[in-house]
Every structure is written in structure tokens, then in C-alpha cells.
Length: 132
Image (cartoon, rainbow, N blue to C red):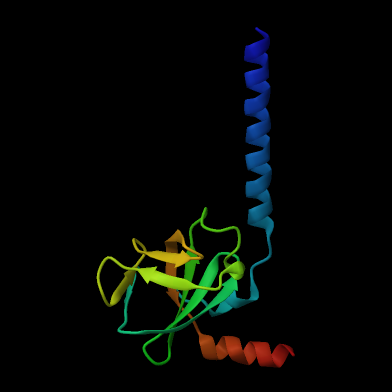
């Protein structure tokens, strides 16, 4: 009887913690860079990854070919915070194409891709300069 009561209490506590975490994540303010993220795409074609940059905890920006930019959202769990990564590589199912079925490897950890979208890099850079 006491074991059933304890299991019930633990389940209730776990549900409350998950609900609180979800509510906290939903109320977080939208990151400033999000206004420069376009509509999601299932895949993008490219021949060369030129550069990458972390935008925030779950997002990285890819610069491909010459000056095409994309924002890539990483699924959790991945690493605690993408901003801590010093190295990145792409694991693609087919060469020259990045899809939401592919992965980004940060700090040696595979991170599934949740979303890929065009990124207005010029607008973002201008906003950063204007804010200073």
C-alpha cells in the first residue's frame, strides 16, 4: 500500500516538473534572430559548407556555397547548449543535400535536425549594427 502511494507521488511530481518545464519554455521570449528565419524547408541543396555560427542554444546558422544562409534548429537532447560547441560537421544521407532526416555533430554528439529554413543574414547583420 505504501509503495503504491509512493509511486503515485513520484508520478505526480514528475508530471508537475514536466509541465513546469514545458510552460517555462513556451513563455520564453522569442530570440531576436527569429524574425530573420524564413519558412521551413524539408531540404536544401548545396555544394560547399563555407561557415557556421551558433545563433542560440538550439540554433546554428550555416553559410553554404558563397552567400546562402540557413538557420538549422537542433532537436533536444543534443548537447546542453550549442553555444558551447567549438566544432561542427554535417552527417548527410546524400551528398549535396541537407534534410531534416540528417544530423549535425557538435562536440562529437549527434544532433538531429528539427528544422531548416532560409536565413536573412544581411537583415540580421544590419539589425545587429543598428542595435549597437
